[in-house]
Image 1 (tube, rainbow over the protein chains, first blue to last red):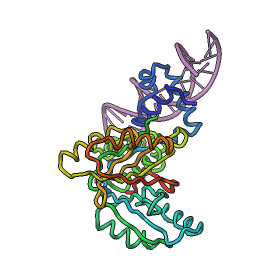
Image 2 (cartoon, helix red, strand yellow; image 1 turned 135 degrees about the vertical axis):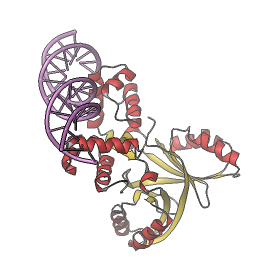
Image 3 (cartoon, each protein chain N blue to C red; image 1 turned 180 degrees about the vertical axis):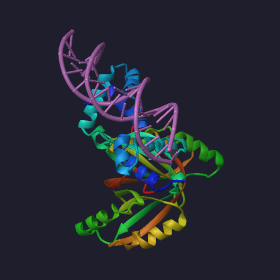
Image 4 (cartoon, each protein chain N blue to C red; image 1 turned 45 degrees about the vertical axis):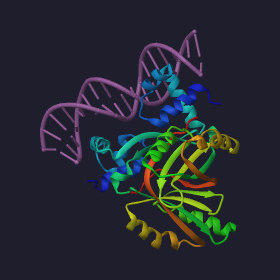
Length: 151
Length: 151
DNA sequence: TCTGAAACATGCCAGGA
DNA sequence: TCCTGGCATGTTTCAGA
């Protein structure tokens, strides 16, 4: 399993994966090779999933974030899997979570502005099959948004 | 501004930032140096925000995701900024969005299991000042979760 | 599982078109 | 903004503890 050094390493990499193994080795009091092998192990085990760039959405005209709560008209297996396979295809939908409660799904949608969202709703989202109702909640400001999981 | 090559480059880096500039140069039909300079430009402009590792939450005992809708008792500037500065400190809270609608905030919280969430609610979240009410929605399954913004 | 050194690949900076 | 070339720096492998 993960020891304290692995956990520390994961926190460091989650904040900045461009650090060299040398920098990491200093922070962890290990040799360069030791760090290298620990990283490879974490990759092999699938704990490290991927290395990605995070971009500044507001600088590429994607600053408008909407949380859309959505209900299906029925909860048959067929309707669910049909809806899910279609929603995955939509690039505006960054996240789709099947959830408990009044609504079936919570979607996080990113577009340019309100007009683009209206267009998305009308031409894309509500044209999916089996959708009962939707309820849109608009983001006013982003207080916190991190990908770093504290282990 | 961003030309088509920049956009393609950003999509590639958002999916995998460990690709070498050589690999990218082939995919983009450019020289290694040209790719290198475009990346540096995107970093300078702040469009590329950071390079991070994404981990597999379920493999590190953080597979339990909760969306918590939260209301403040009042909306004075003081209460808002106090709440926001405190919620940022909580490592279990990956996201906190100030939103329109019935609730003031939507939080995305990641913990080990229901018991850990109960503990978090009782000892951390509800001890913050000025909180009116909360409504927790539990994730049943993750249909889609990407950081890639289609530009 | 760690260390240290050696081979190899890549990142990065000139200089010029 | 692009290319070619070369040096510096990084990654990766391997033997040995």
